[in-house]
Length: 327
Ligand code: CP
Image (cartoon, rainbow, N blue to C red):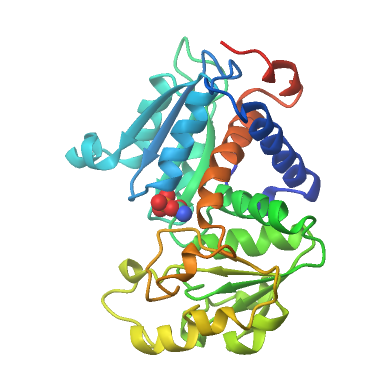
């Protein structure tokens, strides 16, 4: 696997391999005072973010550093993008500067895939490796966020065991959510039954081609769900307003304490963050034991370690061989 651009590119075995690898990283690092493996020593990983981020950017940086990679963070707001440099020139510049991996967040759907093409087009300048960097999609517009889906699957597997036959609800602003698309595809690949729960105005065109069922009633679906994934309402992608109103949305689709009582005893609540408490999720709900929000963040580091390892260390190498060597 050269790039990670979409969960659609992951077979069932690919996904399980990454989740298992993440578990090995988690176990190898558990209880260590010095969380440092030599796995990616000498590799250069660059995060290139054209949109805001807390969880994704930080956890990729932590993941790279825990594997001894050199990690460089490029923020559009403080780079030459602000002087008018194009995305293509920026990507090629970072490649020429020595990136082995580019971790890309961009508001345009398809931006990460385009960067993968531009930086692996075979027109290498003298002295560079013949192949370009691996590209990881860290969120492209409303399209995909594959490592978020992987860490969500990892968290669900920790809480529920196998996802085969589990019923997972994804609730809210599906229209603008790259998290929803990546999760719907990956969870279906892992054998789960996915139900999207949203007002019709917040469903994307073409949703009928997704491997999901669609519902407009959260109350009707909650009792049968093994897990419910709440999505942030992405006001920044709505040009100033959305329907239903925020109050109506909260009343019909907010996961409040009364609705928590409709869930089964072992049901899990997920949220990719950042959360709008009091909007899509009740003020206290995210802090209850059913909620795995901070587990998702912690698991994100191990899952991103596994993804970096898989892309940069090569399929033939095994993590087992290096996991127990401490620098
Ligand atoms: N879930 C997620 O992508 O969060 P950030 O925007 O903080 O990275």
